[in-house]
Image 1 (cartoon, rainbow, N blue to C red):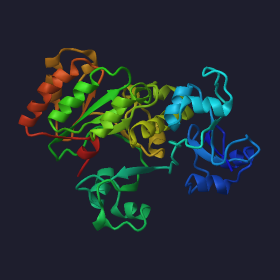
Image 2: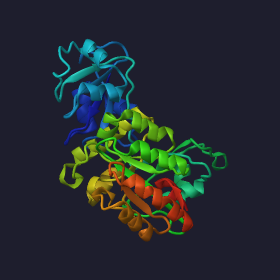
Image 3: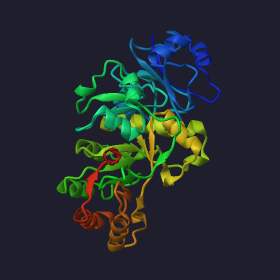
Length: 368
């Protein structure tokens, strides 16, 4: 039976989708690890077993419904297949003739990056030095809640790289600062347009043995996949910064969901990382967006110190603003596209070190 990657539409229910495609609620729930089929969000993706007569497909194929903004290049990037193989399998005469709503058959070797979403659950990768207690404290939950989500987990046998499911507190909030009792700060870089200073920033961070957090808009790894891979390869943390950097409080809930889901799919495919940190474009959010992000398994991360590097006020001014406003647990906002940022970093890093600060990713500065 073919499987369709379906984007939930406003007004959809699992029962309605099942009837539309000749499936069942039970089968859809099973393929998507759903404990409550009533909890779906417009813009979310589901894997739907469909009837064989929907479209003639090779055994084991995936079907995909083209979404607004899709191109064959995006589909090739998302599913790790060639444009030529998509064209051949679908008898598409021209790469420019796909359109929203079009049903595409993907080659059998396609990799589905749209992983099932368990509402309110983070997929957390254990860091060196982590304990269940420290993880629980970091996310403001109980040890028992982590043990309950991970049957068979032996707390004494955690190891770096192990993936745990971690529930997010129901009251969604934005995080502006890490642990105020640890003298550590997180350097964060937002990336949407241009490769700009990325290579030099990575070199500066490497030279100082610092791991930072990069919040990537989906269009950035689309345009610079090698740089996104370099960020991940060097051990930096990657966060979700939306797909196209819209004003997310001014779009529908379905569009906001789609922005987060598709960006994570791209980042998963390009970098192998499935982020659980989200920074809203322009720093704009409301409670609705916080709730959507939490439901999709994201913590919303803001900042303690805005370097204002995007204004290019001068290297000295950027450095002074960051150093003078640094506090324990500070999350520092910078941009990989600001041309004065690398030179400012060359001053910021040693000065903060002299003041006794260490550096870590956002996750690390959240440590208890």
